[in-house]
Length: 86
Ligand SMILES: [Zn+2]
Image 1 (cartoon, rainbow, N blue to C red):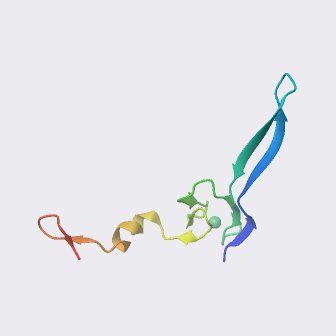
Image 2: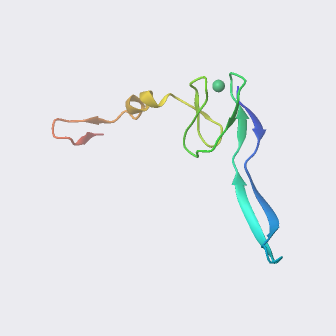
Image 3: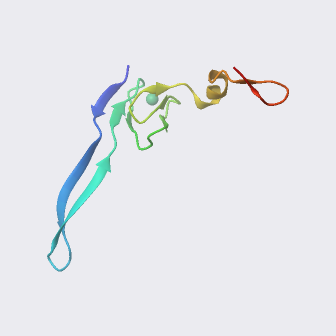
């Protein structure tokens, strides 16, 4: 069970140049989840994020299968000429 600790957000703030003129600054803060193993994991990558326990999550906090199994999961097959079999 994955718990969302912090939702992703864009932080906007006013900063000041050295001459005192203000400017708008914004930066993106990625979501933080609590992995099934109890570790807090920051989802910096929108595609895959690996926890220390070897679980994988996408940028939305959804758990993924281990990347080494992805090849078989696509279910694509090819004939002798390299043409995909539908
Ligand atoms: Zn974990």
